[in-house]
Length: 439
Image (cartoon, rainbow, N blue to C red; front, side, top):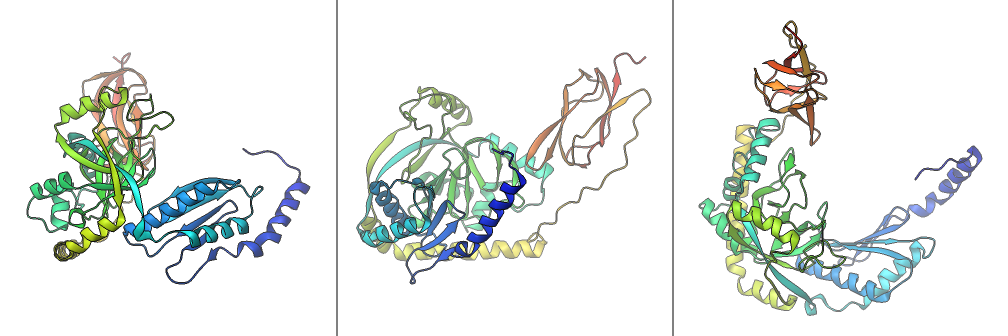
């Protein structure tokens, strides 16, 4: 919230900021190789980072151990602890505890942590329905092709793209892997609303992909997608870039408390949950999506313990098979990128929307115009159709948003002045309407 201050107060505050700049230079505190790195985040946060930017469950377990140890300390002034895949964000109240004291606390607790290989965490296996290649995701792909990028290598089928880039024999093999995988939830709130960042425990189930480039402007709520080696369930409608495999039930309940969505916990998933999908048809999923929010449907949940030592033993026993799968995957990924290069698809050339000359409007008619620059996604009316003043007659996509073009008056649609998929400029005439009182 802004508040007015006198000029003298503003100048005094600025002088104080300048005096603290030498202190702020201590932004990154490195330790010996293998130790965590501490990064200062403004005046109220520290980011603890472990290891290289690779997918390594040992790093996630180490983050969890630090997170739980700090919770147990109960230090006054620590406001939030947010675990990531290989990091922990610590937010504190500088009026109650200083940056140096937080840094000292982090180093002391880190030194007391047990060996990662000895760690175990509680885990729940949650069985969720998945509508494979759901019609809502096909609509999203169609929309993307229509208004963003028609020649994208992942169009018109994300599943075919996943098959190709992973070197699999058929789309049925993609389906088999997705329904066989146990996805370990390593992070929550991937962008919003309890969306999981999850990866298959078995490396032979880790289908890897690139993301959409440019990103989609629309993703259906609770679409299931793969990006990199991670699976995500989208918490709400919005933009996105993961490659679709289907759609599932909500992972966030904004309406009520149920057995699955507990008191004070509107999200379904927890750290280290394992998600297992089972197939359902689109119509059945439609009903389950409603039922889970009211508590009429509760997914099957099994509890157990996940021991890192047991997982390491599994990886060791299956090392040869895992290495073979990864080698095939790497070759297929490289071949796919070469195909893009040969076809000129390795670089995205953005269309430049040039202000168009106004389309001629027939005599006695008035135009419905585009509210902004973007792409004309849908025309909702046809010539000869009656419309009411203020009625939405077309939809323009711009900056990952859908904007309505409305009829300025009641009347009859005389003709269309633009085509779906066409770039449009602000104020461009999209269609002509003959007012009701026009003879």
